[in-house]
Amino acid sequence: MSYLVRITLNSGYSCKSYREEADHMPVDEVADLITQALDADQATIAIPGTSPFRMSVAQDGSSLGVVVWHPHNDEEAPVAMIAIAANGRPATRLWNSHVGVADELGITYPANIEKPPAPWCATLLLPYCADLRPSWLADFEHVLAWAWVLMRQDSDRSSR
Image 1: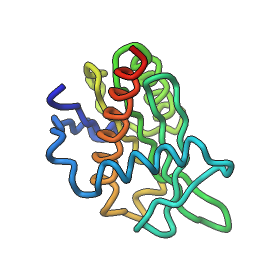
Image 2 (image 1 turned 30 degrees about the horizontal axis):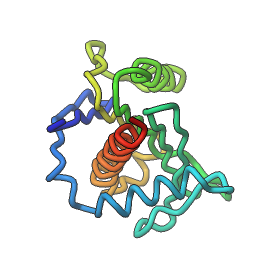
Image 3 (image 1 turned 135 degrees about the vertical axis):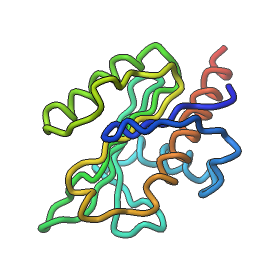
Image 4 (image 1 turned 90 degrees about the horizontal axis):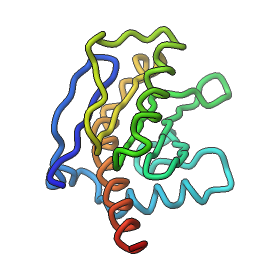
């Protein structure tokens, strides 16, 4: 695979993301962070270098859902939801869930937005994100997507 598609659901912005562009944070370190989050006993884990931001993850086969959190009024408030589909099988369910959250929260997005072919990464910026404007989030999402897609490729190869 030569690229994955990145989409910001709120605006409909999309672009092709090439692996060699994902060097803002070492992909191996982010892959380790994903593994740590999947194995964690606590609900969220710290995102290195972004204190006090944290993340939680949920895996569904080759898909990964990530929520980025930030402290707000003595609780953690969700800032962004990142959905990553490494291949096509569970990608439709993940896409529908992501769009469903936007609908439930009343977050508008372009009417003509469509699920791209996998692999893809779709980010939904939640209302609290506008107050924070985390400048590192786009780079993190980019590297996170590549880390997950490469992890799934390695897993698929080793299971053959």
